[in-house]
Length: 423
Image (cartoon, rainbow, N blue to C red; front, top):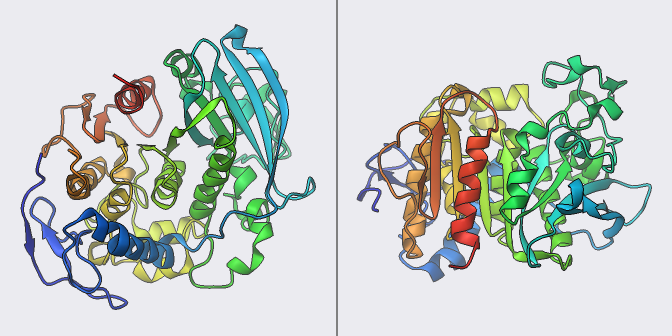
């Protein structure tokens, strides 16, 4: 369905960027189909050759920061395999990724659950977790993370008494299982793949840029387009994808990347920069994720750059208090995902993530899907609460607040079934 006719306006110019196009339904949006020299992109080949690289460079240099390539010395070690995990329902596999190939260097522990009663290779959902691999299931075979664990207000599980000296204990097993419905995922024939965010990059002031993958790339911080934490998490997801490409139990062409909240921001950037991800699932990723800055609603650029200064590059700080004047916006990140399926989920009470802004962003990104001959978001009006609309772009807004619920997963799995499973 069309998102409305585009009309030319005079756009703002920052860093030599050209005038942009205004979408009728959301005034002031930059046009992802207008190149830096002002030319209108009309074919897929022009998009791939000219405009897509321009947008990747804009968001890399001005917002997310620049990331290194695949490490030449990176190695994988499968340190656990149990074919009878979860009562025989799945094969549990745990893999250590050594970023610089050294056991005493940065290590990302990756946990996989692969359904046993499905013909392999199977499609997979990969996403980072907030509290350690051991937190998504009470399975006693999961290695408890040795990475830093928050004990402040951001960790809702501290009151359970399972964290000692910022390290997880046995009592932390399964504390976050509610947000990772393993049975539902496995029953639908998907493998679940996850890793702990702190294994990749620190999210706390005490250890920012001094643990995880940042220790391998110290020189990437002393620059205005520095290797920020959101970019590092996205980069880590790509390193997990490197492993999934060689695991014969996983169909490397049917891997979806999932993320919630700040990890949803990383999932979208991973999908934008790594086209091996076949689908993207964003749950309440909000500012710097799916929602539009130009609306001036929800978390502002100033808040992102002051409360979470490590998330984005230093360059992004120059846009503080200019949200509604930003010469680029998040619908263009969603456009970078085309023509692959992407699902955007919002919550009614999650005002910081601006659910209307997430919907409008998905709607505006549909222009790229139409260029590819796909349907994009199949509506121009906000659907009723708790109702999913699904084209190549999917969307729902549920009741409740900032969370991941069974309803969210129900629609995610339904969406993936449509795009990943043969009819």
